[in-house]
Length: 126
Ligand code: SF4
Ligand code: SF4
Image (cartoon, rainbow, N blue to C red; front, side, top):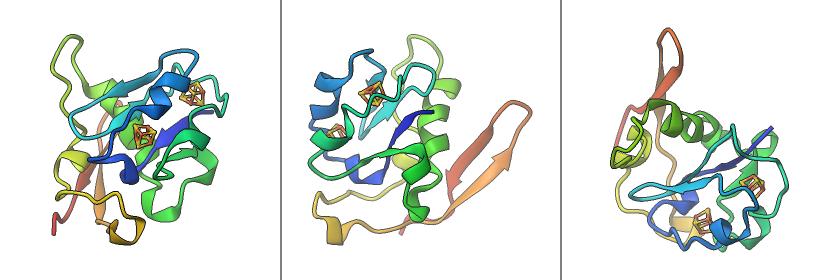
């Protein structure tokens, strides 16, 4: 089991969760942070400190952000060691995000099946 960082973190990134994680499995992209599901020990320490309620247990993800379980995992599966990482393409395609909850929009995504991993991608950016 793992915790997941969803869309509310995008463009907020205050890193409060990083300081709480006992196993350093929360990593930084350009616009958001991502939890490595292979490192997360399911301790719950990160979730209550997030000021925008971006962190969820994978079983508790809101339906509109259910794909962020894969977005977090794919960030690590698809990155090459030592590269600049950037962001998962679902995140990279988002318009500038607000930290105000009512302004957080929902964007449609699609899934492409590959041999090793299901790759999520944005189907609209506006
Ligand atoms: S649940 Fe615990 S181990 Fe997993 S990312 Fe959060 S702080 Fe780190
Ligand atoms: S505490 Fe929340 S907003 Fe801050 S970096 Fe972590 S997930 Fe993002």
